[in-house]
Length: 335
Image (cartoon, rainbow, N blue to C red):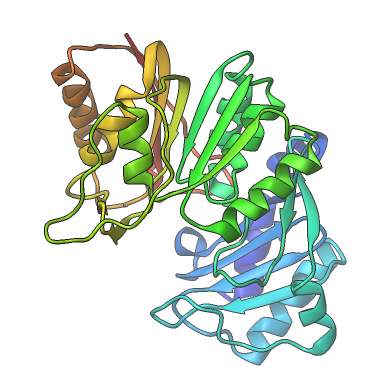
């Protein structure tokens, strides 16, 4: 089946969703999730007043790109930006015409459930400034933050933190190592008039987490520790933990397959009794039940209990083959 036919099928399946997101003041969502819907590594998203096409395995031919553009513009006549990220490092490879490039490099504003977010379809990083599959996470946090303190770890552009603040949180602490990402997070806070409750800490997650948890800051063997912001031990009503798949620093190694506990344990210690910790794992090969059971065991080893839990499932614009989405999110109520 041709790409335009596959895209038409995907749009047809989303008719109810598209009507709902428009009613909810949302103009950023996925219209084609290629790995499940017929073209491995091809994603097509609505990002505010633009269409964003991304390829992660195979570059589109000129004919294929033109066919997709024609289909999208018929649906909504918006600028189309194509980012070919099929190299191993995922960097954008392709050039754009002058008009489209100017647009792609410009700051735009989009909305999700009425919350405003800054967006640039091309910038110094590689990923878009809002991960659309995390919409359900932002919705949960917005609905469960009123009058609460919130810790947002690996915050990237602070979408979770912004949603918490809009939801009425009394304090939101965003932690990320990237100054670029935090600058976008500050812009998001400004767009929604919530700068008074949002804090932004540029730090490696390990020293920030361990200090907040009241633990000693250490590092990997024979690694000299760089400077890091000093933080007091603090507990929060709601903690959101969304680490990358794998990363190394002098302070430790993030490894969602083999060692989620090195992050989860201190994050748990920053969670108040009666509070909630939301854990995310985006590695497809990690079994959901095995991962969940490991989280519960870690809680119990700290002398605490999981009083209840709820799974946060991605919305239907991010389909999976068997109902088990690679991105797993669970909210744990901790006593």
